[in-house]
Length: 273
Image 1 (spheres, rainbow, N blue to C red):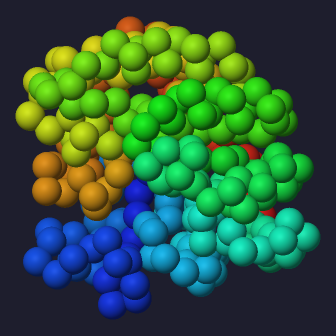
Image 2: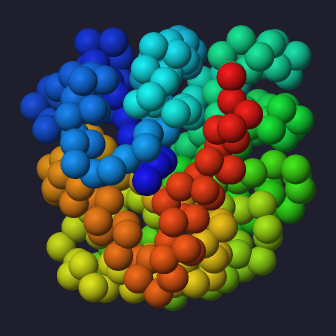
């Protein structure tokens, strides 16, 4: 299995969202990442930027991947922090750092920097994925940008951030899933479930993920633990097991494709330098 969503950080290096006293206010290292995967039969991990808030984070992630290629198969940088770069300079940065994708995050698509969105054609040209982590209408935005850039792989984090089933209505999310699934270059990442669906019976969470899997199919879904963000709610193993429960309706071959082959393809792991 490839875990397509994990983070590493040292709060002393930035990360303004990690407040003193938070359970996340501790350093998580490569050794911690390796220990958290013990016994899980992982073939590797995709590291995802953790909003350090500066352009240097991409160099940190690149160096971690280069130093630990058996553990870290690829990484996703932060597109927001490079919004001040003209496309030509951004293309040079991509050539130097060679991320497998770049993540754009914010409250909504409209709230992300327009100058960051202007860099998306470079990602399409270079074969790097665009990853979206939007609090509202992530699937709608993914479908629209993927439709405008057919060569671009658009990965939606955390099932598109549906509401917690105990407190919100997900009927609109279900319809957005169906619509986004019609756009062939949109990929669904089944991740973040322990945190976002805290308190929800796991059977109901699995049904939520199962709707996404049924809509997108095994060749357009991947899974991720969201470790160590998941830790206040459970271990990396707990998080991955919950994500995998959404695959219950698949055959063994389809399940294997979600857990390994699809991840390798959408993150271009075979062609990564």
